[in-house]
Amino acid sequence: MKEFISDFKKLVKLRLTLTVVFSASIAFLVGSKVQGDINWVNWAILTISGFFVTGSANGFNEIIERDLDKLMSRTADRPLPSGRMNTGQALVLSLFMGLIGTILLFRLNLLTGALSVFSIILYAFVYTPIKQKSPIAVFVGAFPGALPPLIGYFAAFDEPVISWIPIILFTIQFVWQFPHFWAIAWVLDEDYKRAGFRLLPTSRKDKISAFMVLFSSILLIPVGLLPTLMGFGGYVVGAVSTLGALMFVWYSVQLYRRLDTASAKKVMFTSFFYLPVIQLTLLFDFIAI
Image (cartoon, rainbow, N blue to C red; front, side, top):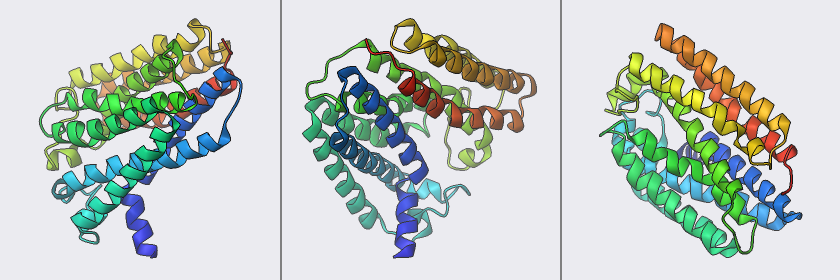
């Protein structure tokens, strides 16, 4: 049982899944503040179903890439490439999680359920195959990667209404992914090349790729100010998001100048903290409109 739990955590990419669930949960609470009431039962349903949906998408991703994972030291010990779990077992687990997760989200409302199905399809069956073909994979993958705030926000409503708030939450997470994933791609470039993945903008650790990291980091400055400018985020949100974006820019400038892995790691670690800090700050500095 201990080995199964360990393999299950690797199949669903536990840390990534928990990050996604956290993002959706915070957005749910933001949506609840708009209504003036928090339905904790629905929050629990979102959290559990979000875990299942994300775990399902990651499971399908690992099934598709099982032979490629054998080539990379970072992923060789996952349950499928290591042989500790066969494709049939992983498929059953992924289908079960996807089915249960989407059914629960459809019970919250139609839009939330539909977005969850779309996220699984886009991540597992569109983004995953493109990773070997073109650097545009990062752009494609940014869409399912930015859907958790939309799913979480709309889950807070019986009848969701489109507004600026979920669109801005989506935009922040969408733009954040570019410096985040390109920094990871820079750090893990040699490992990714063994599997034929092309994730850097030019598929090389050159000035153009470094400039794209810098440019996307600069974009986070105005994007992070959108909650304050649109009137639903306080000045604290604006200050924290600007400070975080400036850290991104500072380390990205170093990467552009030095083209070294150490600078890319600083961008990467900054990205790990930026998003949850901004989301938590927005939750506590949210202004009902």
